[in-house]
Image (cartoon, rainbow, N blue to C red; front, side):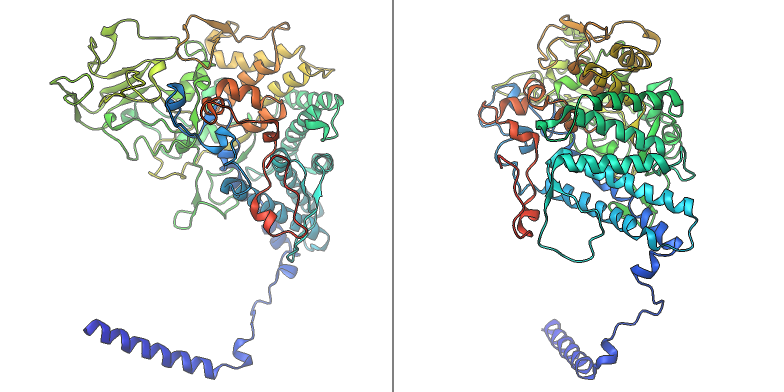
Length: 639
């Protein structure tokens, strides 16, 4: 009752105050007053204001590149959900709409809407800088030209991402200052023409190096232009205005950048990634020291900045208290140790959220014994980080046994596909005949059940499902999704060699290093380390974990065997988790063929019937765009 009286009194008091304010208001009180007299028109025209405007174009790159469900999943290498169901042909299975490509993937998809909005938000910021350049006063002419070129580079990058996803799209080139219900599509051909024009302007102006890390450079513009020419050369649906000459242009740009020696390959591929100890109990690297070498690598031509909070603040996952907006690459690819490791969750192994789950092919395309990238990408051993125990009393293979672990003990080991368990005694005590005090998982047992039992299922308190995706792991990251300080390496010079190889296979002429296999093998040999020059082997049936591990094929290139699929395999090994894999498959017209071969959800589809069609090479225009345009913008065919 007292609470009710207090509420009545408070309500009456608020009403009195509101009445006083309401009846005492006059025009002077409501008039806006800007004591600094600062507006966008008079601030962005100053040197400091214009630089701030261009700087504001960079932070959105973080948000755009973290929309990986549209660029990684639904491909040959990553899926969104575990795939034990389709692997065992269990009834009533359904994968993510981005993997299945069924009618759930439509204009209402939230990921599409967010990605579209971010891209056009970025384009408008870049347009604002480009549109206002002629009114800027007090800025050195060379610096002004540099800042404008940076904006053009970021606009070209944004349009390149958009046109690959959606094809014909609106292409505003001026700052939008007011709402409009009309949005006309530009043809893909015209979008590519504009991108190329912007990038040629950038190449003519941008310096080879920038004082501030992470700003666009001439090399970054050349790299992007090479990728644009390579993509236009494939001339998707004869709609891009491309020709075979584009492959030669792409090759020439790759050769020029390689010859410049501004971006030499690291001698050791692992240098590109955070320093970390696979036994986390023995870790000595700090948050800062772990990424020092990776973030300074000359192999990286352009990267999204996370290490220095003073660079390009704003947007997205920004922590005002620490001044940091973090990278989330370390947490999104999953596979972290289970409760078996005595740290089911916690900061030592970090958070693993399984947004992008590697397919069988993402393991079986590697030679785990010869290719350093396998161990660099995956961590197949789990260690206890505190003392604990596991009872096997309720296991499917029940025993009156309790396995005790001390901190640092091995708790799980996942065998590579070409290193199978040959004897029962080599297995853990959790299975019949096993003698090891830690779980040993065979490659073909990784998804879902252990040991495999498609009908009854299995209870196994020692089982560990799959290796950790270790490539981006950074020690000492706070236990959250997005606080890594690894700069996301968007462009790396290793890709120059593989782009050149692709261009040559497609008919490019004038190469400086030789045939396509020469370029390809430069990347491969770096990955082989001390095995340089040897022939590593991948699984011949990379999609079938039950195939004989002796059934292998070499992935060293020769003039006679190099193909686009072989280059895509190598790109998958080199850039797993980095590159825009969906864009690679779209460009090379292999989205359907490679997905049906390697993506279990795409192959399974709905009830065992695949749903992917040719129209899925373009994404649906988001519903939010359809709803706000008059006349309504045309939807892409098939949706």
